[in-house]
Length: 416
Image (cartoon, rainbow, N blue to C red; front, side, top):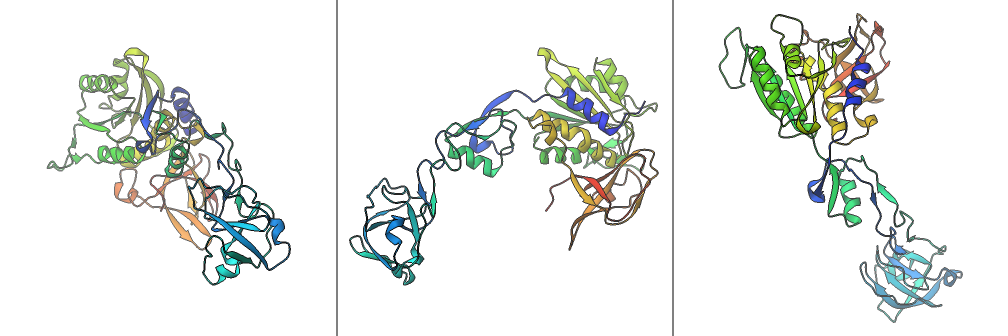
């Protein structure tokens, strides 16, 4: 019995748990997912600091303008100098410098007579102020961004450039992150040849394997290996056993339907894999399957079988394999399937019997981004699929959608 795509994804995510935590150098952790909360090691900022280049003053000294104050010191960023600002005095402070004792505001250099002339008085001279200032103005207060012990980055956060910056700012040279899944790609079929090999009219070159390896690299799982396996029950079963010894995920293309040479389901039974599902009410990709296999030590290998047509492969990968990879990497379930809600560029029609993942390109208009469904010659049409930015998810039972109707859009590549 066919299940819905939503039910299939639920089965996958209920079986997938984040991989063990490993400690990595922060500089090599971009793209990895935190396995721990990161907390502030001190107040942020750790002291009252100047938000700009200017003069630290007592705001009460600028009630009557113009005001002339005696310059008693200079504090660059990073300086430990603490000249006290007393009534009638001021101190030059640079952006990021600590506010000296006695001061309660910073005046922009441009709001002084000297600053208007692009001059900087020497220490001991006077500065003439021409604009009023409020108490606390242009000061970043101690702890206004975070207090010591506050959680700055939560467990399950993917580390990008800004998150790396936060971690560096609290002194984390090494961080605890979830391991990344190891993936093996198996391409089945007597007719399949390696990419560079000559082919006869009854044969085809492997395009699914390279496409999946590339998709895996974009998904943060580099180093995936691929192997072509002929339509032989024993060889398929042995290859699955061998791959499961070292892989967290096995992705198999072809051989998953019900024909005479669709041997993958039987091979999975032969190696003792546990059934998850086989058959999803969707197009393309109805025959796809999901099994799990226990390895030594209790480790579980997740096995996905995708129909051999390229669009079925890409659809199944992004609907089921990618969410599993993201969950294994430590992301929360809610973040495991990328999705955008976009209007359709034009009216579309569907037979409505199955959920339809229609290849679509993104088009920028003066009103924003829209999804334009691409015409194809079937699920084997990889040339048409190569023009797609992703798939528009049309629910089962929907026979027609008008221009502008909102649909879920699954991105298949980074959106420029």
